[in-house]
Length: 208
Image 1: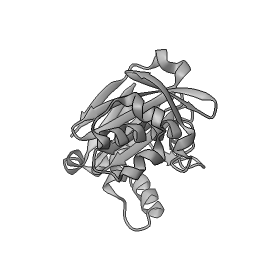
Image 2: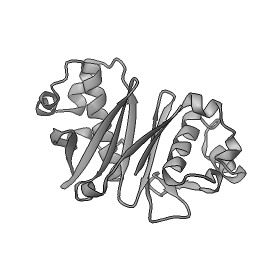
Image 3: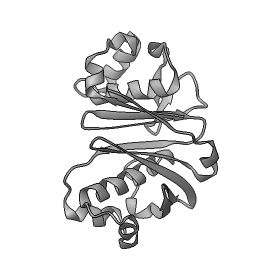
Image 4: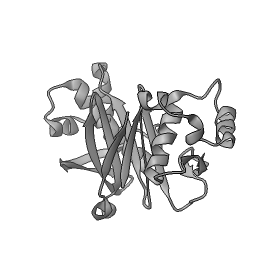
């Protein structure tokens, strides 16, 4: 499975028509309130790289009724996209999947207590609170995306149970694995069902 990260600098070097058909650009323009953001394009480029190795502009990305990205011509593929401060990540698979990326940056102390229990906080043994907040956030956000719940689902109902390189997460009486990667000043997470763990062989690729 390819987990693709694309930076803003990569987009500056590319021709958009290598990645997007005119029809896809028109659809994006119609969806956008003002103009298409760079991060929207980065996320789609990352997802297309995770799905195929060439002919990217022939891959049509749409959205499900719940707002999740989908490969329009391949309904059996699950997809996930995330972006943060000029960096985006995308992944596709044959089982439910979720990703998140967040830049490590200062956060108000109250955010940590809002997203995590004392037990979860102690599990991490992390001295840098900004890294701790980012790790917990991307774990729970990736799990929420994998289950198709989105950011509006309360993080307090997503429980991090244990970890040993892989994190085990409980959400709506289902179990998931989440793996974390640190790249430059970003934390990246990928979540899949626990029963699919033996199928996960992640190749993390960066385009910058």
